[in-house]
Length: 278
Ligand SMILES: [Zn+2]
Ligand SMILES: [Zn+2]
Image 1 (spheres, rainbow, N blue to C red):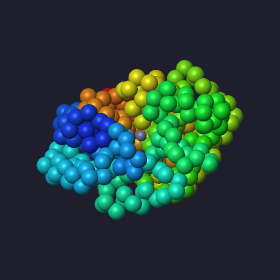
Image 2 (image 1 turned 45 degrees about the vertical axis):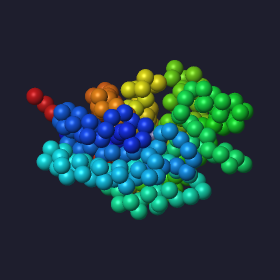
Image 3 (image 1 turned 120 degrees about the horizontal axis):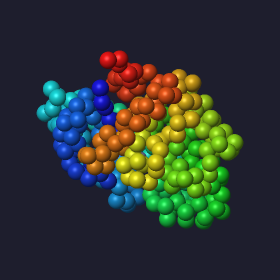
Image 4 (image 1 turned 30 degrees about the vertical axis):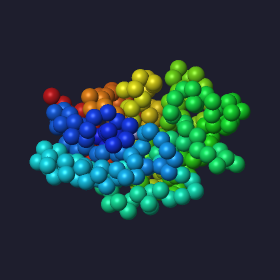
């Protein structure tokens, strides 16, 4: 039973029409496919859905849901950015979504009125680190996890997107190692909060298909902590091109099994991932 609830098509920064993703998913025997375009932002940008396109997006996915209902379950959602000063989840949930992903792609340091990207490019990451956090990766990382915790406290979404996105440009542990006590403390504090919610943490393979990382989000030790704390987990590809729809899925399932997981949870199903004998 294959599913993916993190799909970007040409309504935001993905390549290809929604239909191409549906056909690819059916071809590969997926049982469910959830679309999660980036919800519009007030600031001009080239990676989110446009305000004027929200209704078209919802209508198109709902049409596909009907057209392919005998072959696959299709769900329409949004990947919604958390902004500390407003409730964007309340706002977008009014659109009658099937589900939503809550993500932190940007932080707004104290005293700043502007949001700064965590994951846009290595150059931007480096410049935010140098200019806003005095080159302290510890301060930058703490700001990221504080923002993530504030998002969890606000709530209003089903899946938490790419838990440790702050490590995107940390390939080869360029900026920090994950066994530093301050890093573990940030992760633990965040998991403590998740433990008391129904939020599903996604294992996200998007950075592998983009070639920027050689491990998925979140790192294996964090998944082990999720398992120990009974935090529900799903597996998503954060796909931006149809042929990456199940990139690194088999390897990820092995990682999940080795952490102890026997099942995955999505907003609509429970999936048994135990190996069948014979
Ligand atoms: Zn994202
Ligand atoms: Zn995404």
